[in-house]
Image 1: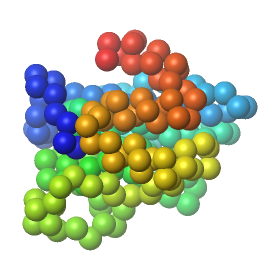
Image 2 (image 1 turned 45 degrees about the vertical axis):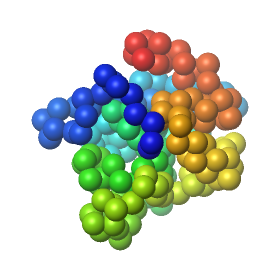
Image 3 (image 1 turned 120 degrees about the horizontal axis):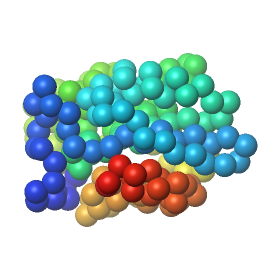
Length: 176
């Protein structure tokens, strides 16, 4: 994304380090939203995020919001037919393994050269949350707001869907 915060985050991912950021599991059951923090390992491993979300075993909708280093975000939504994903900035795959893992999972055929020459662009399923209240057109508008940081974009998603207070409470507990 174009926005960048001075002094925030650790920069590009070192393979031994967990990036700054957060993961929040979001569940909608019986018409109510519930948010819970996810473990730090979800910031470096898409499979860890999928596993943690699947272990929630909810009868309702379950998805994860991952903010990695205040550089990009991922929406991860496990489903029986396979995980649905949205990566806010495909060019992050040049520096972050989890973004590269997301592109691989999405079967995106984008070369490193193309990523290096591109401005940030989203990749994945814009309709990932459309059946539970966020039309793909609205998500597209949020992604186009490149002056917002990833956590601000995720906050906007939460407001649009009606779980902003629940998300804010979790982020306060995480000291974000």
